[in-house]
Length: 335
Image (tube, rainbow, N blue to C red; front, side, top):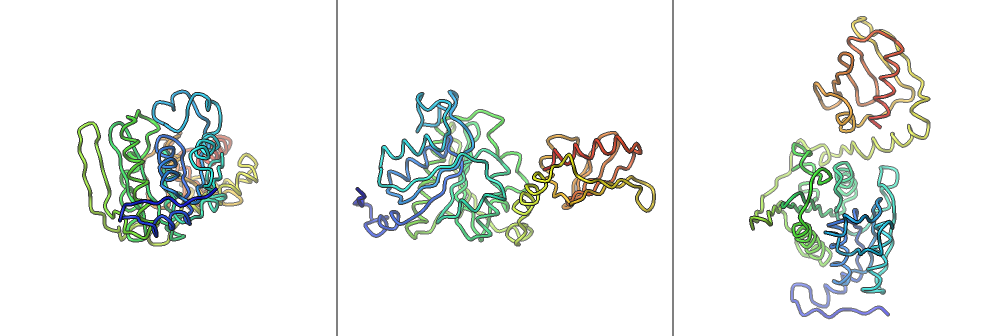
């Protein structure tokens, strides 16, 4: 039976508690951060929670993902978390999805607030674009080693404003993380969510913490006037939608036109239909020489200029068969 918690805190009060009961939050990433955020919001009296994660519970997760236990091993994280939350408060409306968010399915996260608890750079930026476009507060959290970061992304200043030049630092996939910093970051995220959902002003600064050295810092953030997202350019949302269509058609079966460019100084590859290329994915698979907003220069048997819409220029290679083979490799890697 649903009940309203009576909280004596003047910061929340009965009105705030009722606002929480009427609120709908989405948590993306049910791992070290997401499990703690989900439990805290559940115990705080949130009305509805949507949990999204594509992974299964592994033994290594148990050292910091405190909502799980050994009985959850091998099971989907989102579904397992939902079952544990129901044991805490079965009056909360919950839903869980074991899926990978893309530009095609991201509308599923539409809610009053979204909490970014992922460890994946591209998903973080995808969430940022969607939330800015749809005017949804996004509470970002990340942790690596003993350090953690929390930031509320809004139209005043978004995640891309502060991380566009430091994107390589945003993932904890490649390193270890201390469980105490993930709990601290998650607690701060949940706290910001409660403030937002009860009509209070959230923290506008970027919060940085090093729990090992007991260091805590708040950095004032200003909107980057050159930020593509704040200026209405949602590159990942559009690229992923186009990529999904390309995958449906089959990258291997793309029709490629290969011919010399007008000056005959390079060989030109034109795919039909056009493909939106993800430069970050290409950089993981090819040596990069240079990069601009709409093109990237790769090194593989000579220089290859890759345009974001999918056209390629091979400056050194002339062998048609090799060009076609490398072109398809680029398209598969960059989609």
